[in-house]
Length: 322
Ligand SMILES: Nc1nc2c(ncn2[C@@H]2O[C@H](COP(=O)(O)OP(=O)(O)OP(=O)(O)O)[C@@H](O)[C@H]2O)c(=O)[nH]1
Ligand SMILES: [Mg+2]
Image 1 (tube, protein in one colour):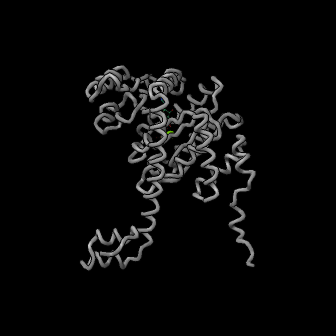
Image 2 (cartoon, protein in one colour):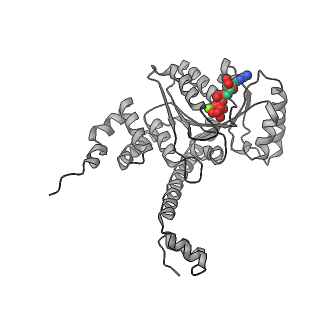
Image 3 (cartoon, helix red, strand yellow):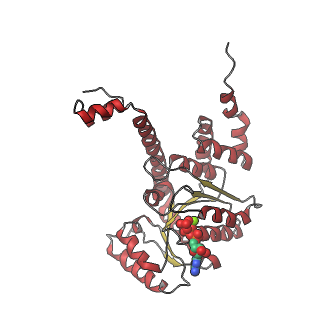
């Protein structure tokens, strides 16, 4: 008999990791997050356990998006303080510090949020992973599921408000908070870019700067332009000054109102959509990995006209070459 592969034993889930995770042990959670982030199979039973626990006691999984510098991190920090004051446990995932857009900002974010570090009711983690198509990675969604399963009442995902991840956030979370500012026609831009459609709640942050009221009026007007009926949810719009904690209670109330609007059926629908998005992302990631690993010869044959691109794609997907 050959010796056991040491790598297999290092990452094998000890029976107690799952039970410690289930009992809300923060070290076990930390370990689970690390395993999930690395995409290791040992994370799978923990992910199932997390989903099972969350089904009994769903948390509020809130995605925050908005253009760079709009104040997402400052708002997140204010939300942590406010929610802690209400006795809620809060987990935060800040995504994509590797992005060229966020520069070194994430470090500042972490330092700011570190003031909560001694608080067992707060968990902050930043993730570098990016999805195959530049949006959120399936690993990020799994980390959200783990945090929720660990019993956090609120799980907040702060994304870089650029490109695909800005839109993905709505598929990865139960509720989406869009952060805009009075500056530079932010609201009109969001409307044009279709970002407003994914918002369940809107913050007009930096309301201490001129133009906040006008921005709110423009947003309200833009909301009225979209198709709607008596069931349409109009994202509540609140002015905030994140650094001062102004408007934060109103945002929390608005998110809770959206949860009530969704109801049990609406929440199940969102959760199914989240799961679908995660599975689809995994499929994309795997297929692209396979496509990248494919020998250049396949592509050379397409380039020479010996094979058409559809046939090459079929071959990659494991189908017959036609
Ligand atoms: N005047 C004013 N400044 C604010 C407010 N909220 C945040 N800021 C400032 O805006 C800057 C950017 O804030 P962040 O919270 O880092 O913004 P962000 O959206 O997380 O930025 P990225 O993660 O880099 O996209 C910081 O200098 C904040 O202090 C506000 O309500 N009013
Ligand atoms: Mg930030």
